Image (tube, rainbow, N blue to C red):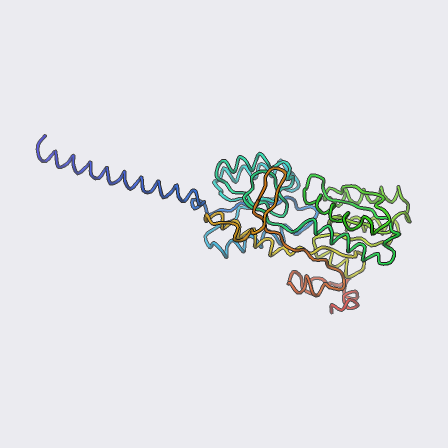
Length: 364
């Protein structure tokens, strides 16, 4: 080999070695980024349904998107709604993983069914945040309200609405979906208060979080018990409460009915006296916390800075959790709760048919 050829070979080898070293360095860097979720700037958001409440589309989704954007300017949120189908939500979950999303905020439609999905995701390095209800499987964090306390507040608010009549009152309970762990917590908390403070729970069924089903169940209760057979109705949420109130009106029955979620229509029913109370779970702090957890996981940070508590699921123990405090809303404190927090304005609530009732309630 002549000198010119040797120089060419040596030069080629040097370039090749330099490229190999650079490639190794880049691979190491990519691996580090993968561990931190840095190869993806997308966060998945899967919400459960849009039939019983407008809250998910009107509040949770935009609040989460806004907070993610505030915390991570070049991050995006990939959103889907399961529309009340666990099978559809599973497809949406799998699609996010196939797209390379590294963090998923999951409000499970059927929390008991998620164990295998979340396990498969974890095996692929995908972090799952259980949002609003505790999914099964190795979730990385959980953010919600203290749901047993929600039930306790519901039960006490119903007792308060009955006043001196509580001890002699028979109660109808229309609970949430049995497949939803939150529904079990609400029910347990409500019974903790109601049992011993009212005469008896004389009829108890699941309304499945569906207003139509709740309407059917209260119709069956009226048929079974008669118009005077119960003195109050516990409804697990406001969407079902609306259908229950419609059925009660058609039967000329006027008894206290309570719900949960502080939807605008529910607040208007408080003003008009049709509904006795709702439970206000401030959506923005919940959504903000979920976004903070998601961005922290995407950036490889410790979630315990946000989720300082812990909770056990049916499958896993010691899950980092952030639990927020709910509030009871009645006609008397609308101004101090949902209006003070700018969830709604007086103009939102006091539309034409509610104007006189708003004046009587001191809102105008």
